[in-house]
Image (cartoon, rainbow, N blue to C red; front, top):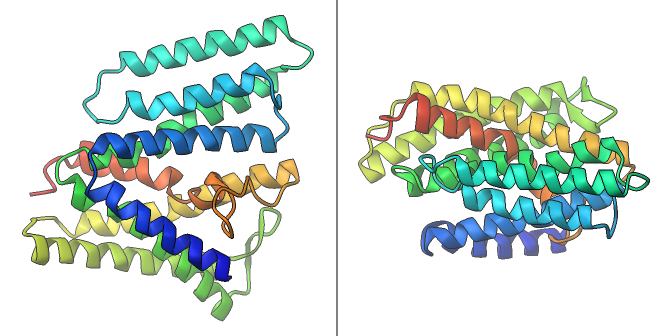
Length: 273
């Protein structure tokens, strides 16, 4: 527990200046680095082509994806170029080394190198959008509050298992408690932004995102856990001592961030004021 707390304090101490005070290109590069490590963890942990060029190609693509899509208005051609080059490279691996690179590995590689980085980099696009410095914390607060209160509510009232194979300790009561408190946290967040920072943000989208975002966060948590169960591992890695790897720590934000991006940057572009 001590190691876990120390890691969390250090991580937050580094996260805040990167998120708010340093140039946004630093945040983009950090995101790319995290995605490269995450791709390595997922592919290596699931025993997909360890120490094979396929692994290094996937890590390179995972690093590049956030760089090509760091802004909502960014042109698509850089991202499509990365996708095309990646697909050609990994299929070449399968063609010329078919004994080691099976078709199922191609799917794992596409997930680790393209899909997960695309979803995760949503918070970089939020940060680079209008009022991004204030809005970017909202999906993080949502999933953090949901995770914490799902644990507390489950310990206090949990009786019915949510997904016993994937996560034996999670309960339906805990999931509902996390959703309720995360929605409340979103409303409070918007009220603070309105009264403390002069924004004119509506309340009903905050309620909507509290419900949808907390649900997405819990699905993200379970989704990355089901991969671990299938691979027979406890953690993806140990890059965060006491917490595990990249996808042990950031699984909850994986689906919540892009949903927030869609709601606040595309469906309701004028919500910031």
